[in-house]
Image 1 (cartoon, one colour):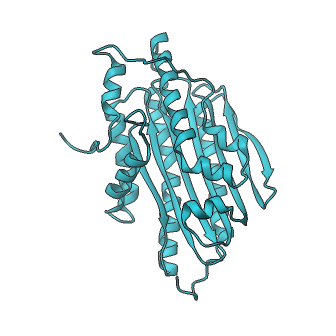
Image 2 (image 1 turned 90 degrees about the vertical axis):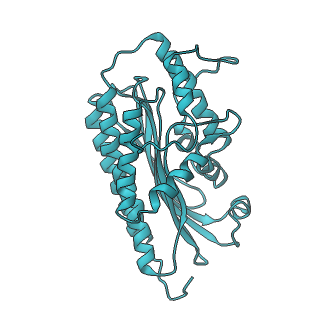
Image 3 (image 1 turned 45 degrees about the vertical axis):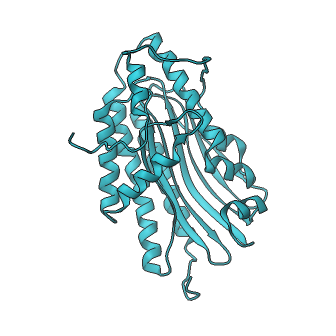
Length: 306
């Protein structure tokens, strides 16, 4: 990296992320109409802290959270080894969201935008949005991917196909041989050598975060009033179980947070209030549950006209 490049923009980045957290929380409260976020501010012993905002027992959202953090300090050796980095202090800030809805026709959603910087000059942006429907509705999947493509195309037409594939590969439960959901976009280690590149990646990451609220609110409104049965609620708990498996076995953000001394309650906010694991459960042939499993594969082109 060019030694003349000034990266002293931490305050700007974290303030934009704080504003994003406020915007999303306000919008979700208005959409839910009943529940409210409870804020819990915390400090990290090694440096920094955050604002965890938890949501429970709403009309739409059964459990979830919208968290902001900005932490810094000595980088743990495990993280240095995992990321193949030289020893140096770190600074990391971001917003992370997971929402588990009441109605099984409303999908689980996850979003994360983040910035990582080291005192030796290394930096990068990362993030993404992905959707985990309990029941895959193709027209909703197309809408979701179209919104993400539109954001990507404003910055680089190569972003959507690249980051969509990255999400397909990342959000994959290998021991189940199925994707966690219908994917979305995922990106990491976006960095460059000039201020122009820095600003480009910062603005793109912020734009992804700002796309979250209108996209998910549309999906809520499409499905929130649909009726559901005990069978569909039981399936919801099984799909939540798959979500738990991914987050605890594979998710890098969960591991990073726990290994850097992050706040456990905030990190494990991503887990649902209830989940279920039935031994060797297989949906009956011809059911919506069986059809959903057929959609949980990598490489589907949701924007194809076919």
